[in-house]
Length: 217
Image 1 (cartoon, one colour):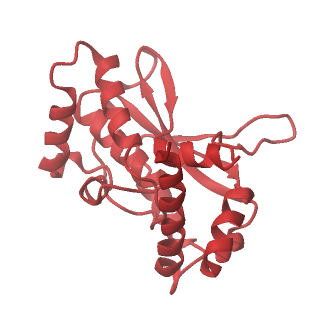
Image 2 (cartoon, one colour):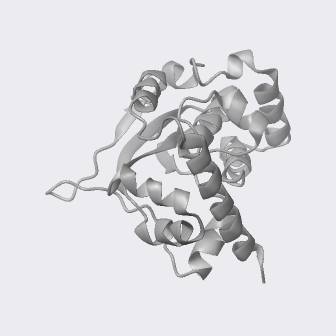
């Protein structure tokens, strides 16, 4: 392996599995009886992916996301990294820019005027997912839960991330063993401040409505 496995197994300020018995218990319960690391990964990834997606602040600890039982792309990816590392599987963060899903936000804004403020974020947004080492680096995005994705598809939307590319068609990824410094800077640069929780709450209600559509037959 042409990298230092050790740095991708370490806890961090926000990847706090070393200080969270709950994370270690969850990792053990999810991987109990697994035959290999691939099966461990699949179980852990499935658990984190199916936690409901919702907007929140960036700088949450993995233990906070586990306790709440839902999260944004950054929070869910951080929890995934923490559970994988707790299980002895190297993982790292991957950060890149994506284009805003204008159709999704238009639908949410029609139901809640407050959600129109999401348009202030601009056409490009930061996105966090992660990579896991299983003989080679494999990307994995636990951001949206399946019910939300099914609802988006039923409404004619798309679930693939629309990645921002440069003039040569290349996506620029920032890959980090510890993303605490980046997250602190991103939280400091947040667009919404005094009323952000109200905006997030309205958007999350909209996500739940789409989720219900996804669950319906």
